[in-house]
Length: 160
Ligand code: THU
Image 1 (cartoon, protein in one colour):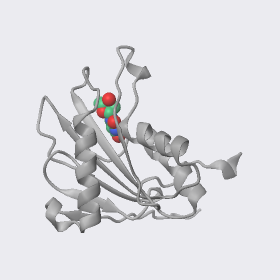
Image 2: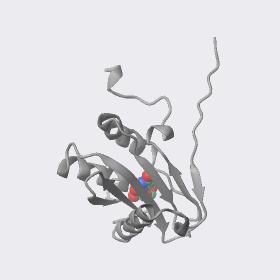
Image 3: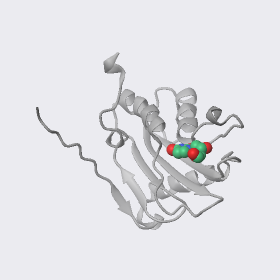
């Protein structure tokens, strides 16, 4: 028997102005995407902005449905837009932000487990890490250097 330790690390910023210009711009795009989310049931709007290696920015936001499980998270709406419109083009970084009509979201909102799994497929295929930058509506911003750092012991095609 042996014990192993899985460590992850992230950088925490206090304000948007501490981010470099590219990250700030991308987060501002995520905020734009957030405003257009369709979240009449949860009132929790999420926006995601994907910066591709060719400079293109692709936006996604959550799209809810009266049949709740038929709705979809912002990150998966976004990454599937990338996968369908720009197959083979690498994703450099993703900015994510969330805001609620019920409360002020003041802590960073990371991608849910299902979104992490979905995004991991793209990071693995492109053989280059994707930076993930996430925040609430206000407060601290977290930046990680890869998706897989958010998903230890993940499942991938090597098991199939
Ligand atoms: N949501 C996202 O869009 N991304 C996440 O990573 C977490 C949750 C959405 C799904 C649903 O529309 C709302 O937020 C509340 O869960």
